[in-house]
Length: 181
Image 1 (cartoon, rainbow, N blue to C red):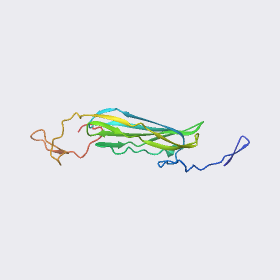
Image 2 (cartoon, rainbow, N blue to C red):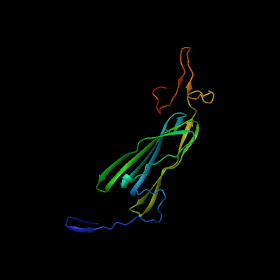
Image 3 (cartoon, helix red, strand yellow):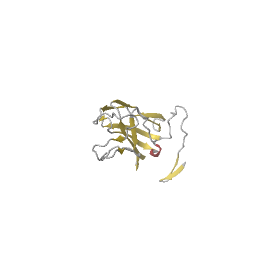
Image 4 (cartoon, rainbow, N blue to C red):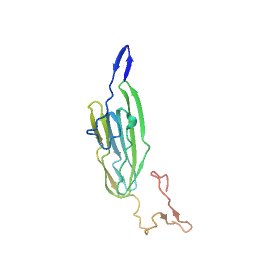
């Protein structure tokens, strides 16, 4: 590639990425990156919600930052938010941040282990592949505030009337943050 700037002629050579050492999960991300993650809160009641947030940020082809996926977790519903990509052009080049969030709704008490998430990229400064990893997070799930469900099998989503004139209500689903049930 030749370009002219201020009367000088520059010649740059584009090199292919090496095959040696290429991780299986490599998606073409090239530059200098880092990853941050957090879980908030770290203790919830069963049926409550915690948010796992992961951000990948740096300089390079940030549009190639992959969308990560939280693996299925036992007795837990997972709701992914739409990832947010912020791209910025600066004196050092193109950079930015991709932030991904998941609402985790555990259904049983106990300790919930959230495994590490990873992103591989080619580091242009070190000239080798690097892998970023979040730490494993732990969510402590306390017993839920409601009484244990003692309905017969198959009737989990049927609410019993509370008064003589009340008709049974069949629950079709629940929102993460219900206004009222």
